[in-house]
Length: 140
Image (cartoon, rainbow, N blue to C red; front, side, top):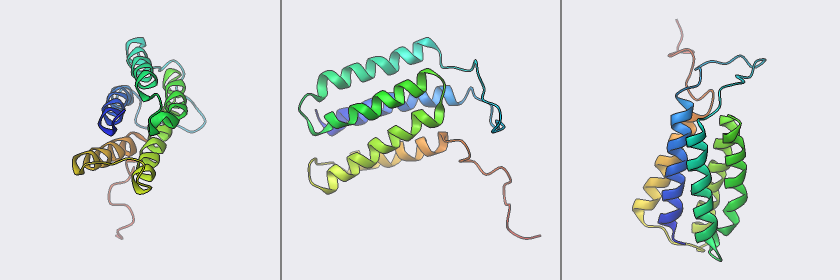
């Protein structure tokens, strides 16, 4: 399995998360969890199919160890836990960075750019990534 294929998979998962996150309320009180707001079954199926393809293709590649993170992300996505779905994907990006640093894999500049874009997009999905008071703390 090549790095590009892993990034393609992450792109698919990110698209599903983005689509789901846009349907959530922007502010949710910590004491209440929005039950009943779950991703559409079609979105979960796309996520599952991507995971299945990854399992088939990763075989003995250095990426095989990423499966647990993907399963964790899928399980969180199925129940509508955005934070729980995003964190494992960020961990995958960190792991791929480590693999490149340790020279287990090679990445082209274009692949490095994609990783940066994916990381930025995942961080935007996280709750609390948007400041609630624009310009707060700049004095009166």
